[in-house]
Length: 350
Image (cartoon, rainbow, N blue to C red; front, top):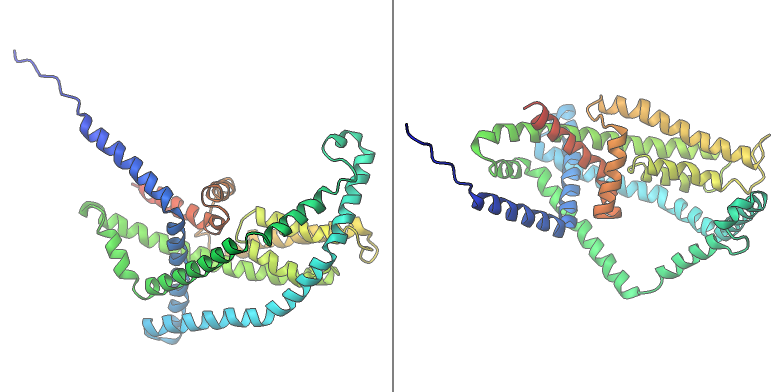
């Protein structure tokens, strides 16, 4: 009767795998900001590809010519929006900055009255200290200190934007080249799966990009019109602000809904409504518009191709914002969409 020799436990593969994993995590943390730029370039290239496909289907144009037209149309559209919106927005923003101390003083007066009516709040807020005004002045004064680092940071920001645009153009004109190089990194047995996953990712991210851009434009227009009807000051600035911050789910909605309401709290009211009722109407307008955008507009645009659970979306915004800073908020939702597609295709389907 032969005895079976016990298998020797091999430490080398486990140690090697552990070291490589740690090195990869360290490398990812070191170049996270560069990967963020690459991901932004991929999103822009997918947008250009979606617009080019529209021109190819509608006008039977060659793909390269359609991409050129898509790029030119995008640049012309951005320039046109700046020409139409920037002057009035700057004018209203300058007026807003001039009267901001008066609004802050009115807010602090209201808080002081609330503290006087509810003594328990005295431990949190001391009347007469002007905490809000001092915090705003500290932030503004900090903007004008350390000018040289801020100028260097501004130049670095321009370089990053230029790099993203150049990478996006190359990715949009030669997507197959970079896709096949990425697929070649996988073992041959998994390359078909990698190709399918990349195709699903492209479809999902295109749907998100198109839906997000249209939703942002609709939010900006509807909010500006509604605030103008409700006689809210600086309605155009708040409308554009609502469209811009819509890229950050939930948190952008909360800020863009409450901020215009705060600016009518110290006014004379609207129609038969006093200042409180006026603020409530403005907040209700924001809620209705965002519900319309979230429940009607986005599902119609994306055709349910991008269905992200709300809790996971909030966590994605918090986690990515913590890891990558404010710039990470721009890609939190598409990063979650990528993870959901990979989990669905590999861990669940396979």
